[in-house]
Amino acid sequence: MTPATQTFLPVDFKQLFELAKQLPKKEQQKLADLLLQTEETRDSVSDKHKNLVRARIKKYDKHPELLVDEKQALEMIKKI
Image (cartoon, rainbow, N blue to C red; front, top):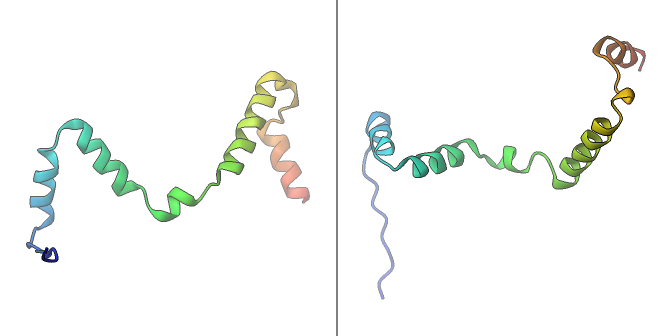
């Protein structure tokens, strides 16, 4: 078995865009998602933190009286 060779063809942005537009809509969405997904954005928020935020959202949905309005929150932050 011979090793695979890589061939690079010069493709400019316009050609690449035209090729991408020919993909089925589902594949276009996958491509867009991959382009927007970087190592930084993919790993920037841990699952542990996401779960913590979700738990807080549930808490405040059940007890909206615990929420602080924006003005009061800014005053609290300034005091820190």
